Length: 393
Ligand SMILES: Cc1ncc(COP(=O)(O)O)c(C=O)c1O
Image (tube, rainbow, N blue to C red):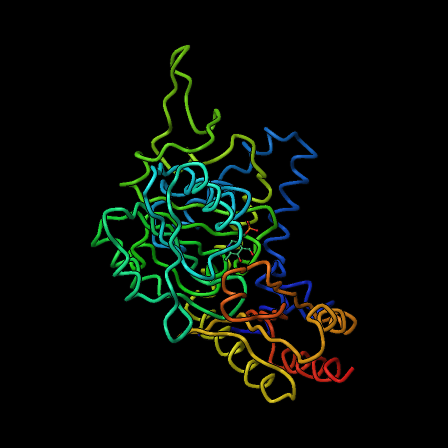
């Protein structure tokens, strides 16, 4: 299947106003997503919040089936949460670590994941081990294999890091985790909606993602997947009356499904919107989305690389739609502001978002452009032209 870009743009109201090349930040939602969110909010305003939930239950509950279909899971293995960070935290903080235990992770793992690793290490005496990269700049599968031993209690890897086009070899890592019987947590925040995900093929036990990026859902939404076989052994770090039943004055029983990781109060408009966004992505076919965004990313890199003073910073054997670069002598923020004056949205990936990698690779703050399937080749050319002019200032 190929993407009908014209149709995708017609169904994306923001295309009339901006050249949005910040889909790794927060994408432009589609009209169907907007309708799902606004429709639910209007219903809440008309008949009451709890009543609107009951009336719109099918659209809201669809979230579980749609998410499961997206990642090859069961609906009972899914939790709705407010962000990828909350999803990842609910899984990570469910694991118990003792002094001397090890957590294996990647050089470019997400900033908030690293903050949690550092906190867990300080609290428990566990050790965080950063698996070195290979010659392509991705997690070295060989080094990871050598590092797996009885001390390793968790492998936690970011699939597509926030600060570049890298796609980590999550399935090869999953095969090692399975063989060793070590739980495996994947941060799929930037890959969900951009490339096909299958939790069995990846071999992960838990996977977290956000709604607003390549899935094109509303802000303030995300999901967590936890494999059935692990679910009932993981006690969530926070429990409320959504997660558990109060069965005796001094006792509660946790739900047996993924909803044990949820909060009782939820953004139901957002949940209905995310369900619609995921179904919309499935209707296009995520494989077709991946072919288009990968090609747009590669083309953009080639065109930017031809400009004097531009250095492309993306690494990896496989690269995605996230394109990062810097301009000699011009701060990334200045480039972003110049592009914004031309109604082109990009963002800045600061060195502080990936401290270890920035030090290892001596990276400056980077400009990050991230096309999606609804972007056109003319739009990426406009970006290149704007960068060319901004780079001369
Ligand atoms: C790789 C990665 N993981 C996690 C997150 C956090 O997502 P959220 O802001 O939804 O918590 C981001 C956000 O940019 C990200 O790029």
